[in-house]
Image (cartoon, rainbow, N blue to C red):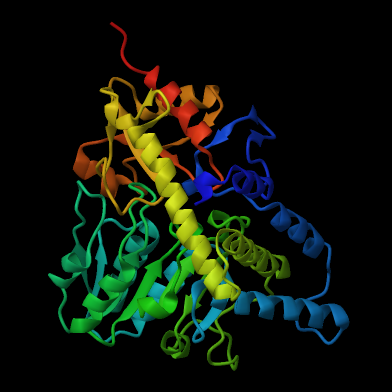
Length: 419
């Protein structure tokens, strides 16, 4: 267990830039990982190296061929990391942009009068795309209502509304508001039991940093991540699509390869940093297990990350040392329940008598970085049914520590109304 190995925690933290300080703020605790994880130092180094290379990948010169090899390796590494030997990986502007492209393609190729199904827990990256392109393509949109109290949606919820004419489905792997993970494999199975040819597209952006990705087990047609939320950097997204979706008619250049999905010359550095991320998971898996195969080490890393992050969120909720947990503070309400096994490294709360932006600012002044989620176009689907205008999102990752959790609890305890 990571929590039982202080030397390993120190080694993990040493691999990340700005793990305990901000170049603008100074010393701080970073509990804003759902908004963008910390960046590996190796990613920073790799980005600088490739930013200086002028050659286009694939050109007939040593640099062009060398950079193309880097891209090819990154795609192979992604196959190991996400466990698939079929389909293809490609990069785009962002995770949101890629989800729009995949959903658009699935919708415009669906039979007229068919249905698109998705859930109310989803980030607008999928909900907006699905509703927009369902309307343009003449498809009916079916909304699966999530469980407000649990902060998630289940396979049973999808199954209750499934019909054979569902041609496109979207699934959120983890919510950036509630922090709850969905059982993608079970939801996919429920969809295919009724509509076996449905195109299923998954938003994996929030889930990916917590490890445990397995495309072969999901039986879906598209999966999208944002590397800046998986220890890499901003400026691009990564999509995987099945062979079936690859071959579907889609936006492309005239006479270009039929299964090509990328537009223009891609940034070699962005792909190279993906390999850095995969290498990090491989390293961590070797530290927490005796596995020798890369995929097995990555699986071990995912299990260890999940266990440690559960340990940290449990400490946050139940208390640590002589500090009471959030559940024991009368002025704190925890969203999606205090004992929710679907939680993935995130606890959202509201503070009695204080507006969430004021809480976030108060914590920030003490060097504790959190974030306000408002009932707007990003989070209103989750917060409005709860009657909440906003909440405080506390999101952690496996480089955070129990000591940092203790400092947070001490600060939140002091926010109790006086008198």
